[in-house]
Image 1 (cartoon, rainbow, N blue to C red):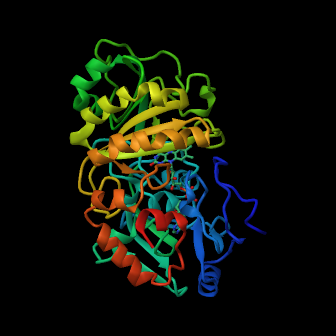
Image 2: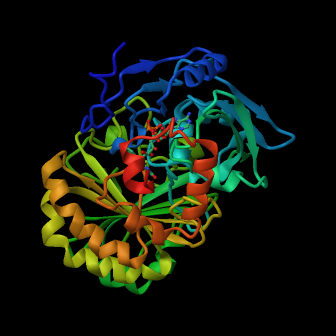
Image 3: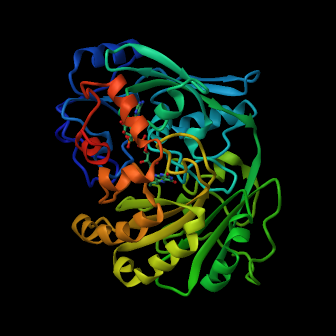
Length: 415
Ligand SMILES: Cc1cc2nc3c(=O)[nH]c(=O)nc-3n(C[C@H](O)[C@H](O)[C@H](O)COP(=O)(O)OP(=O)(O)OC[C@H]3O[C@@H](n4cnc5c(N)ncnc54)[C@H](O)[C@@H]3O)c2cc1C
């Protein structure tokens, strides 16, 4: 199978890979890496930039035998490197357990999500990578090695951008299963939201604000409560009495249930249901992860950019993420607010305005999401990550020949 016709999920990128390999055992993964001078893991293809690409062999782990082994004693689940959240979550739940948080969609591979610092929302919820207790990495020599939480390289390797090797096993923390209820509030005035931002994001276990950046209101606030009722009102606004899509023209059938009806974590924490196209499908995405202390200034700057961004925007979402200690995580070292953009699938149009959004947010400490679109390069990114030089040193040690290198990594990490 040649890679020349292979595209990412959004279709905005054609992979340059010479070949797509689909090994059916971890041993085959090792053989492929050992034999190929340039190689790269491919997850479920949901990134919007060239992060997953290579000029050599793309390795999809989707055909590995699925491993989903719950260990109640250590409160962990061990999974293979190709499994998606949509495959892992039902099995974990069926055995009475839960993952602490999920992204907006369950369709993505766990290893791919972890590699880019993918996150959901919640003041107390770390990015999805913070659930990783250990992982097995096939290194540039084609040899598997385990990295465990607390070991020296671990915090550098988890959000690894696929730059250090191919992850064939992940061990994730789990907790007893729990219920969540999603309640939506419409047209919350920006003035009230900004004056009470910390109370607003604390109103639930996971909270999302959807905006167009040009209204006087936050169009929708989604409050996902865990084991507690949603607030009866937000600033005097009553909960919505029908299901709301954040992109109002789209069919709400693709969404997980709302209306404050409690249900299992896996059916509420993601916005989108398995079996449906998540989001719109025709889109590109960007996101910047900022220190919470910069929230009000970032929102003020983006509202001023409203007339520039709104014509290309389908929706924008604001979420929060708890600080972590993973070197290249967007939330490394600081409680974080994420400002996300779902753009129209207009590549030249979005590329034209990205520098303006980068110029507004990078100086505030905004770290571009590794799997989404930004114009930032290594000179912009290096000052944003305290452990950037340490990551580059780790990469040099584990992959001196840049077996896992690609053009995207050259741009964001340097050669
Ligand atoms: C509709 C939609 C909604 C989204 N919602 C969110 C959201 O809520 N929050 C958020 O933060 N992001 C979100 N994203 C972005 C998405 O979570 C990230 O781009 C994520 O990395 C995609 O995972 P993937 O499995 O598709 O990985 P890919 O895009 O295929 O690859 C991403 C990176 O992971 C590496 N990788 C994949 N598998 C492995 C492996 N086994 N070993 C080593 N490296 C590996 C690749 O080499 C590459 O570097 C969304 C994307 C889409 C399309």
